[in-house]
Image 1: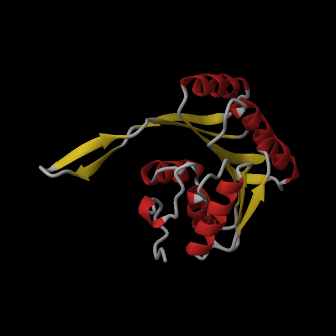
Image 2: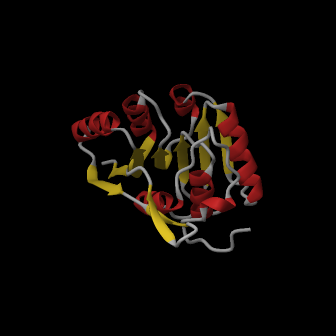
Length: 196
């Protein structure tokens, strides 16, 4: 269905559910680039939502790699499975469980994407760092200011290297009866770092 490896699959190609979040295509492209993925890697997608990050990551790590998609929302799990099937992706395991319980059972990772989490984001990041291989990358997408502050404070204490904070603000065009207007989306702050 998607014939290119370039990240940023158009949002409209994914099956959607109003109650299940999706990481928007432009944000996905930035996050994938921050993850520095390559074939053969083991990747986590924590808070997989619609599965859009899982699909993108799976394409990057190819069949020699594997993605572990985790979400506790049954609707998100089903939607992720549906999108994986739609794109013909077979190198992803979908885990219907709370991240706090699922992470400890996963194999060590080369790259971890964290998003869609609630108030326990910092604790999830802590658990992920324990499972991240040396020189592995962690990429955290955040919207709430409180989450950004908490995660940044924690990451600074961990002595990670190559810490980068990027805020992505996207406006998308929409046709109206009189022309085209730009509609702003929520800014997303992306923190990425490498484990020593």
